[in-house]
Image (cartoon, rainbow, N blue to C red; front, side, top):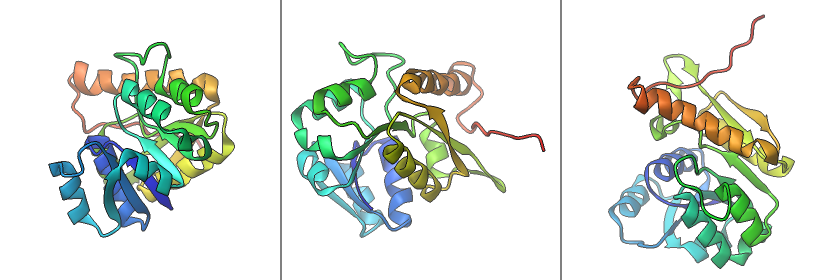
Length: 206
């Protein structure tokens, strides 16, 4: 799969490595292609290359936003080619909303016209994306959005990144709820000082 990752910070970098290891071609969409983060990721795998944001989006099938929410909306406004892509919104607007929108998901949809958008890879810390295994147990990921096509891609990429399962959190109307779910992790890990090495796992009684 050809995947553009917009933002090479903690989350974007962790998923870049996981997906490159799984054999995907990663196009880093960067404002500064000479950044230390970009150089480090390029050294990690031949499957990783750096590009301008516009070039990365145009060359990809799937675009992951791992930026501040307002930046994602701004980039969507400037890149009409997003309309025909599958977009994964990994942002969280729980601290600052990308006005006039409630979420980057909503803003990307309105500004680009893209309908194949899914909220995913926002509900846990980057450490859990770098290593989703706790002993012999793999943790879970969650996806929200009304595009079945986008959710299928998010599920496959979750499995490729090492998660045990990607649970369907509901349609577009559940995007904000999934962001609040992410805030629950942030609250436990950081505000309540439980530490970042915690994760969510769905258990079923047999």
